[in-house]
Image: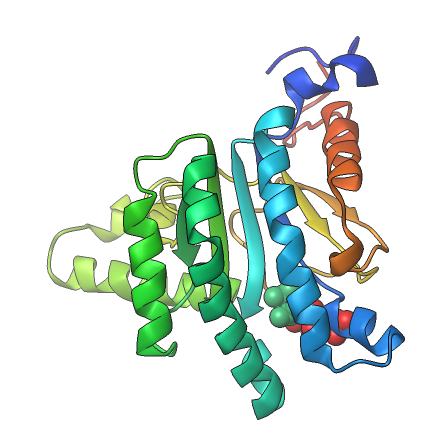
Length: 247
Ligand code: IPE
Ligand code: IPE
Ligand code: MG
């Protein structure tokens, strides 16, 4: 761990977060404030993603993980859920070229089983197309829930134990996360939630054990490169102790 004591905001980019995860919340309220249907807010929200992704390399963020749809979001009206699913399909088609030429490697986490076949095919295609890109690692959490992820991971782990591939005594803090959807990603350093709610809503429960949190009032469709940069800068001057003492 570097000694953070003497760092100032000016050199914050050198010690900024490597992995930022964002709970993109507030699309519905943004639309309601304008007297428009919730889906209008979701479309505006989707348009913000590109700018945030493209900011990452400039400020040293190597991994960006965004929460697009939770396992609990199926509770919304059929109109909203269907609208979101159609937006995801159209958005992937529309953004594929830009995301690939920018050099982003895209991954999806969450349970795909309940998603429609066409959407799954588009997700697979985008992952394959971008698999050699390294400029920024963009992970989209779609039908993702932290508890669901841990339950699915545990099921696979139990299968391996039953098959004799893993001994119960080998289930540790190191082996368990290799069964999570995020197994190839580092843990998030900073989790940002927009819209003023101070809760994590089942996002990256295991992975965020030592993350720093920023809850901002901005509704997601208004979230900008400037605010993102400023949150990442102030992260750089925080003192993460991981249970130890300040060095
Ligand atoms: C976040 O915005 C997007 C999704 C959950 C899909 P919301 O739709 O939750 O917006 P609010 O919280 O109702 O304003
Ligand atoms: C969290 O937002 C999920 C996403 C941003 C995709 P929600 O709006 O679903 O969370 P709650 O219902 O306020 O906890
Ligand atoms: Mg919400």
